[in-house]
Length: 357
Image 1 (tube, rainbow, N blue to C red):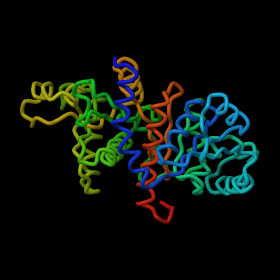
Image 2 (cartoon, rainbow, N blue to C red):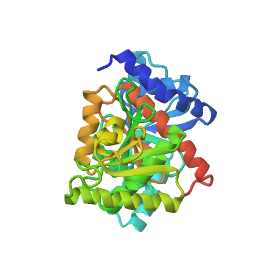
Image 3 (cartoon, one colour):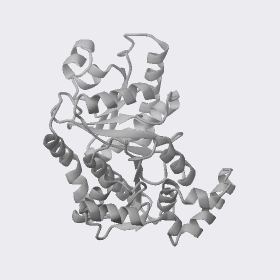
């Protein structure tokens, strides 16, 4: 394990280039759970870095009181109490429109829109904020439900999933740049073959965006290229084949391998022993797991036992940038996640200058 100062230094390696990008293109980032000292400190840091305009949702009295008590400067930080917002009535009307075309059952629009997660998601969907960060206090399902209900889905992604970014420069074989992208760590329990292929390709795109170079994606299994001919291994192999066809069709610059064991994906020496007929290649940048159990357990072991710093998860499959952080998230995790989703918002605005997918 590494100490807190080393972890902060490792985090800075990830966040510093993101903050530099955001200084040139600052974004409005809404935090759905603003009554949290960690979030207040992150908002203060984002303003001082001139990287973002933070928007905190919650009780204005409690947020400002906590900031005063703890000596946190909220200058240039926007604080909104949803039910008292000037957009509240408008958002209620828009919720009714969403209900009509998505066939949702909304008993009381005012009750729904008074909830910070729903209000924040509606802000992002309607252009009052560029990106969203939540989950630092609430159960993940509460945030996910609001995002799915309020934000348009991406037609190219069959089901929303999450990618977690890890940095661990003190660990060997930890990605090609001391960084790993893990998917799906939070949403899809048993992805179908098609969903697994999409998770691989879309996470590869995210990794390419952050790393700025072609990436290697490994689709993990207990088997390497037929060493175990179980149905689960064959499913991952088939998903890898489908993912490679998607990469070819979309003319993407990434390499996908699978099915492979984790040591083959990350350790060139292990790859040479187990696959002597293949080229020696650097560690994978992206690890795609066969199911949610494997992904989530691996994430927690790397984080809590290996000392890896985690950012995100970045949620993929929505038409607007959003991220969920765990309730155990450190200030550094929330800060880095906000920076990451802010940079995703830059990419979104470049891709969709008119604001629509």
